[in-house]
Amino acid sequence: MNKEIITIFDTTLRDGEQSPGASMNTEEKVQIATQLERLGVDVIEAGFAAASPGDFDAISKISQRVSNSTVCSLARAIDSDIKSAGEAIKQAKMRRIHTFIATSVIHMEHKLKMTPDEVIKRAVRAVEYARTFVDDVEFSCEDAGRSDMVFLKEITDAVIEAGASTINLPDTVGFRLPQEIGAMVREMSSYTKGRAIISVHNHNDLGLAVANSLESISNGARQVECTINGLGERAGNAALEEIVMALKVRSDIFRDFQTNINTKEIYPSSRLIANITGIEPQPNKAIVGKNAFAHESGIHQDGMLKNKSTYEIISPKDIGLDMEDTLVLGKHSGRSAFKDKLSKLGFSIKEDEINSAFKRFKELADKKKEIYDDDIRALVTSQMTNIPKAYELISLQLMDCSNGVPSAAVTISNNGKEITDAGIGDGTIDAIFKTIDRISGYQGVLMEYKVKSVSKGKDALANVTVKVNFNDNEPAIIGHGLSLDTMLASARAYTGALNSYLSMKGMLKFRHTDSRETI
Image (cartoon, rainbow, N blue to C red; front, side, top):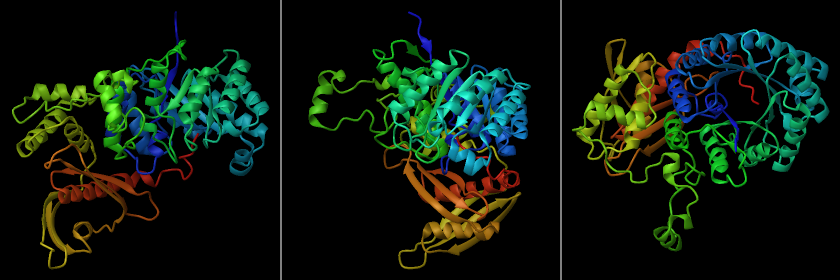
């Protein structure tokens, strides 16, 4: 029996990046896009081209690298947005423009200050203009979950006539229950009668995004919009891995449907995105959480030893997770083995970058007894800055503060010139950061500081993530640092945030104040 394909529309690079603290640079976005392609994602929403020159550049580069997935850019129903989207994706083999406007009464009256007729005219104009750039246009009725059904049908008719081939019905604020979403999708699917694909985009404010997505599929939706690890603003979006594995594991219920997802790439995708964004899935997160396959209860352990199916409905290998976690590379490993490992971990990087990563791997192998997959992921991810480094950390020396004031001496290279300074602080970390501020002349305010071990053992790598605000009028910047020494990792993270700020400073002033609208 032929099964219907459920289109997986991944918006990790657009909606997922709107998670607080999840901003990514261009090279990181390209790496994620190539992994999403390997995962088998049908449509990659690569960003919001009009948001900034940085977003435009990332979408353009992704369009050049990705060939097996459709590359999509979001655009408000504004000519300038649509033009930016069309130009950003023009080199993609398969391309889509995703345009939207709000359709709920509360949004039309209070945000748009437009009448329903004006909204329809704007929507039709947007779709018609988008069609001058691409054949594949998706139209979203923002806040469809709280929109009037009569009006939804009216605007849907209009945009389909204008050329939209996908109609997306977002539950923008995560308000609806599964039976409500199901009823809306069923009615809209019946009404459109195959004239367009019905899509859903469910937010997780009530923890129902995945349930709502599955209910939508049962009632006629043939595209679901989702993110890896459920990333997204507020409580996040429907998690791709949960939707896909629910369809696979419960094929008795969803017997008529399948996806193009290669499930063995789920775990590598999850780890790549967690390492890049610094946002770890909660330990008990379904499918990809640290404890998703952990069994501590004696009764459970006994059952697992006798037959794994007693307590395990998914095999870790089905999602690409090797539970052995054995040492596979060391200081005697060659470049070919290292390159092969990078490929298996989901990385697709250029030859010169492989050389640089291999050198760092060898340096680490000389210092660390055992090298785990997570060590390699962290090492390669930390290299993906690909931004001009105005300031580069050369050395760090800390003074014994057991009986005195915490102090740090820092040497930083700035445009080839080494500068050394020292400072004191309320603690060692504070002393390091204040000294870097003194050298650079930029005063950063630390908003968040996180440190975690990358793998296991006393010699585990420390991965430090900082969130720093260098300007009250601009967003806080994320910096990552990696080292066997936590203090050195912290200094690298802070310096990385400073470099990112200086690199982004020119593009931030072009960002539209409302360009991060959500659907």
